Image (cartoon, rainbow, N blue to C red; front, side, top):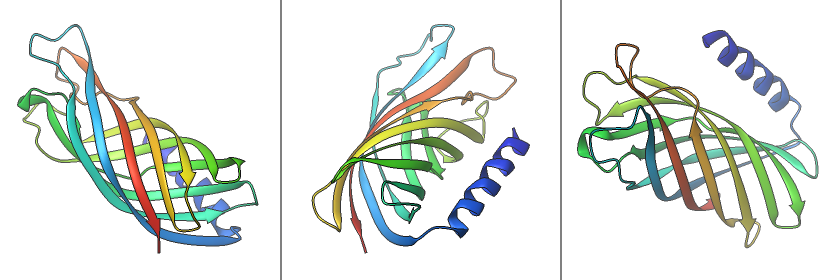
Length: 175
């Protein structure tokens, strides 16, 4: 897994080196998340409402494509307090402009647990992400994303597997 992540980062750096235009900004919003637990959990597993915030760098690759990288703090997990998880995440998304002002994107997101989990939980997680973004102006946008965990939030000692499933609704500004 570490080799794949290193290869992904090397490819991203190579693409960024050839980027035409760079923009920076901040993004924040709300999360609606839950854990997909196998086998079925014995604790309450309702969705958790939380928030996220962070900064981004958007490297334009062409008139219709860009590479977006972010560093964000995100509250995720399930409703039961024992299943709360807070993460520092680094989304990497390739974005494609569908129409003027509307972009779609997909990519990967490594994350590191910050606090909120007890022993038995993994420190590192990896997710796939997809989203849509609408630009109100050259500076202001709204977006929606889905994060689907590809690795378990529980460590290898646990009898269960669980992945984060999170919907994010955000607003951002380019500075």
